[in-house]
Image (cartoon, rainbow, N blue to C red; front, side):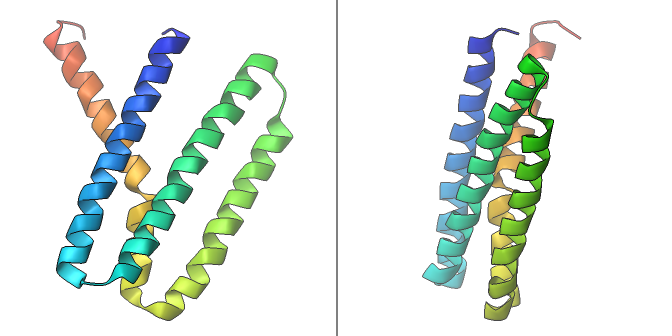
Length: 129
């Protein structure tokens, strides 16, 4: 796969993530009428998307230069620490806040799974296996 094809896939994942986030926010507000839960979900989604983009850059740098293993490990540690540091105060708000936080973090995972299903469908419809 070429670099521009990879960038198209990343852009599609980001578009899917943002559009699914919009749908999720509307549903959260419709059912809970709480802007706090919407803000929590948006913040968690931004953390998930930025983590995804930073991880892509670090993995590319590591693969191309065979350097950066330490920065990669430090980044993972910092990311987990940051996510956990936000998790604790949210747990004081309510149990629902934790669920919306996890939903926001998993938005990028959902978008990646949708993109994967699209790739499988595209390959099968073109006769590739």
